[in-house]
Length: 111
Image (cartoon, rainbow, N blue to C red; front, side, top):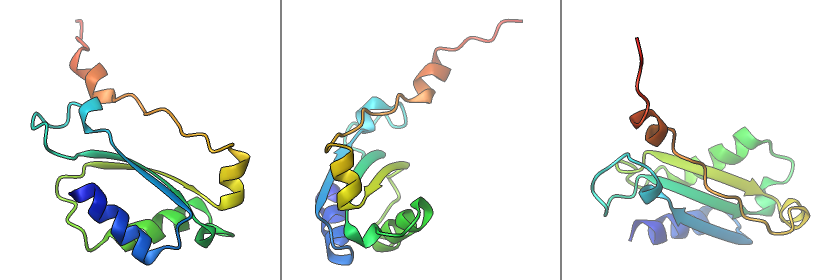
């Protein structure tokens, strides 16, 4: 499965203290195929992120994932923390972002 493959690649390339990957494809209207993984939310906690800004953290993750086929993945939402940052957040996971495409689909332009 793709989610397990992503997790293994990240664990191989990054020293991970905690990782959680959510398939949020069903929250979006991107694909009518219910088996397609199009939207992911990934929470990664690693001290490899110490003294690295958000852009560098994301580059580390995308570099680790570059060998994985990403054809079906339209969007990846990343939450990256050091272990101390994660503790400060009290291990709180964030709610999923509402899909703007659903709002646009129901929007009617009036003349």
